[in-house]
Length: 300
Image (cartoon, rainbow, N blue to C red; front, side, top):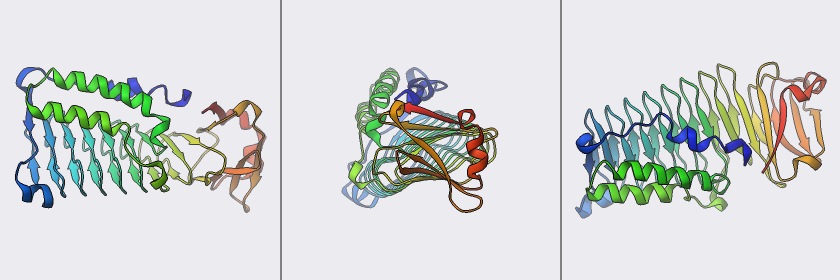
């Protein structure tokens, strides 16, 4: 998908992995109770690799460029200061990036992702997720994993290679497997509508199938991936004067686009007779005056 070709650069760019002993590794606990009830882990002021177990884990990376994986269970992962990578895994997880350029991947379950301060990348998965970019120029992606799996798998390989060069402990090997699995996780049939909130900054929000997107302060770009039969997405604060909307479709060259009023102040965009996206606070008359200035089509 042309809209997502930026992913490899975005994911890897800005991440710094130290060499030698710069990473502190925390292996999965062998204690059965910890696996069932969860465990609490705290990182250091350096770059940590922290792995949770099968329960409800609380993991705080503190400072440094940390990599944290919660695995199964409803986990709470906190990146803290630094450029962190947080993988929620299965369960209803809460991921907080903190300050820095962070990557948050929710995994299966109904997850809450908060990027915090910095230019962050937030990716939901199966379930009904809430993605909050916070301050900074963030990218929020709520589309099906199969649409970006190839890009994420390639990035996972690069991250895995970087991590493997920092440590020879079992934790690095376990983490490599989890990163690779995160790129493909999530049952599409169990996906629900997501909530994407960009917050402050110039954000990119990409949703599909009933997602609700709010860009917040700043000049934002919106993308809607649509397959025939999907539910319409909602953009609550689109401004056609300064912002853009890209529709990613099966056959954009043959698509018939219609902009229609949805009440006195709201509008809908239809593709071949199906409502693809609803825009609040924008009249159909204004949007129809020059749609080529704000509406773009890309192939799926």
